[in-house]
Structure formats: structure tokens, C-alpha cells
Figure 1: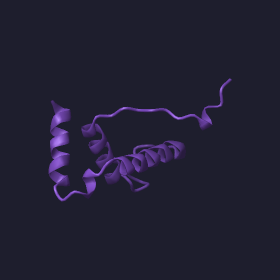
Figure 2: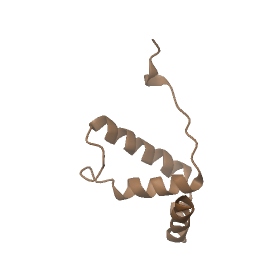
Figure 3: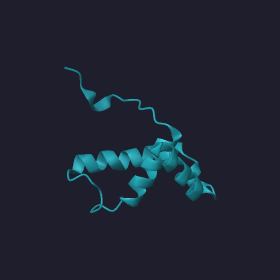
Amino acid sequence: MTDVSEEYTIIELTRSEALVLLNFLATTSDEDALPAPDEAERRALWNLDRVLEKALVEPFLPNYPELLEQAKERLKE
């Protein structure tokens, strides 16, 4: 049996998906607000948040709110 603890999985997201997920994770970063009741699930969500923060520059741009709204609209289509 393979030990998966040291393996990585590559996940492809559109920029819109990444922005919306990062925003969701940022707004639910309070331990009580996270939708995961399990410590391992919370840790996985926090880790995803960190990966998205490193991958995206949009949150640091002055027009980030507008970019986020555009991303949300694209995902609703």
C-alpha cells in the first residue's frame, strides 16, 4: 500500500474559482465559522487558503473588490 502522506495532488482551478474560494476561506477563517467540524478538515482548508494566497496577486490590487465580483459573475454563468 502506498503512503499518501508525502504525495502531492495537482488541482487545476480557473482564476475565477481560485479568487472566489480564497474569498470564501478568508471570510470563514474564524475557527468557529469554518464549515468543517473535524480538525483535519479545518487544517486542509487552512492549507488551501495558504496555497491560494501564494498563487494570487489580485487580493493586493486596488481593484480587488471589482475583480472578485467579476469572478463571481463568471462562475454564476
